[in-house]
Image 1 (cartoon, rainbow, N blue to C red):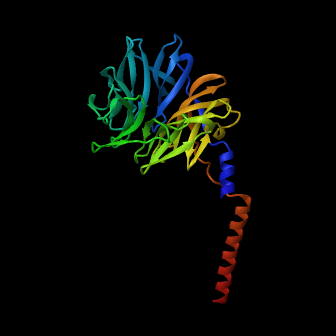
Image 2: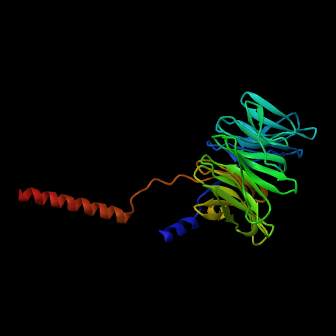
Image 3: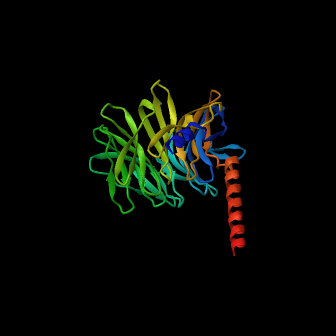
Length: 342
C-alpha cells in the first residue's frame, strides 16, 4: 500500500486552468465556491486593481465607479464580498444578483457563508447579517481586531492586536465566547480560515522569528511545516480537512502547497511537468478539492483553478479477465458435475 501511495503521488493529479485576466499584468484567485466559481482581483490595462468573479467566458470585473476593488469571499449562491476603495477610504462591499451593499467607511469584508453572514473588520472584528454590522468582542489589552473567515454555523476567526504590537489568533464562537489561540513558540498568530467542523487554519511565529502554517483540530495546534524554506502560510481549509497555502523553498523561491493526510505537498509536484505553470500561492479550496490562487503561466502572473479530475471508469485488466473467465468455467463445471451426480 505504501509503494502504491508513493507511486500515486508521483503522478500528476490536478489539471490547471488559466482563469485569464482583466487586461493587466496579474490576477489572483482568492476564494472558490462549490460550483468552481472563483472570486479575486486583477490589474486592468490602466493599472487599476479590480475585483472579479470568474465566468465560463472569462473574468467579470466587479467595478465601482472607477475605484479599486478587491474580492475575498464567495458563497455557493455566487454572492461576493470584498473591499472598495473610494477616495482612498475602504468600504466593505457585498456584490449580489440584486446589486451592491456598502457596509460603510473604514470597513473590510473578508468572507461570507452560505447563509449570507459576512466576516470583516472596521477596527473591530465584526459579523454582518443582512448588511447590519454586529461587533465582536476582544480580550483585555487589545486595541484592534479583524475577522478573516466564517463557517456555516457562524463561527468567526481572525486576530487581534495587543498593546505591545503582537497579534494573537482568535475564534469567536457562536455562544458568545472567545478562544485565544497560541503560537508555535514565538509571539504572534493569525487565524485565516475555518471549515464546517470548526477546524481552524492560519500561521504563527516560531522562536526563530519565522512563521509556519498551522491547523487546529479538536483544540490541538499542529505545525504544518514548510517545503524547505523558513516560513509557510495557510489560508483555506475544506470540510475534508484539506488545507492550502504557500511556503518558501530552500532556494528562496515559493510554491503553493496542499496539506493532505499529515503531509505538506508541493502543488507543482501534483500537476503535469509540461503544463507551463509554476503555482506560487494558493488561497482557496472548495468541498470537491478545487484550488485557486496565483501562479506564473508561461511567465505571466495569472489566477488559476486546479481541479482533481474524476477517476476514469475502471476496465478489467487482461489478467483479471482471465481470472474471471476461469472462475466462471469452474462454476459451470461444478454445476454440471452436481447435476450428473444427482
